[in-house]
Image 1 (cartoon, helix red, strand yellow):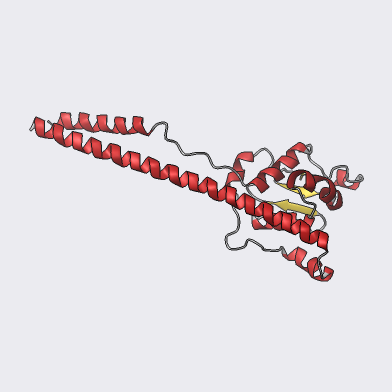
Image 2 (cartoon, rainbow, N blue to C red; image 1 turned 90 degrees about the vertical axis):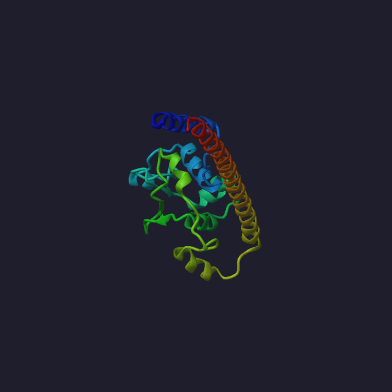
Length: 214
């Protein structure tokens, strides 16, 4: 009888495993802002722009740094005028920096606009999904931008329009992220219900077979 029970247990585990196949969770997607930032670095050449190149008329607007574990905006003016509108539909450099800050990027040089995040590295696109927003800090302004913002005083109407566009884009990104999470939760619940159903069927069948054997 013990051997029969063991065979039933093994059969039940196999059935559960086979039923579970095909019900895998959807892979997580990186935040749109992170993906666009990564892509603009890759599409911009993705090469290394060292100190010598930086001094040589800033041949590149933005690039990965020497070790590929951060990136440098060599020309903020050109970056705002040419790169930001292409990828983010605005030209506000300060807002781009604020977005970096909300995802935990750090400015690592006092001489240039160089930023770093341990999960944002050249050739490691798969790590982007592990970068998340800072909780409870949706509108944090980096300290190195606060002083310049205070000195400027009133914001021009153009900057206001840019900020409105950025907020709309952030809102859209948040909605997409929320929808993605809701879909993952729904899939988890569906898998949970299926597993409980299969487990219940297995227990019932197992008990019936044990009664027959007894």
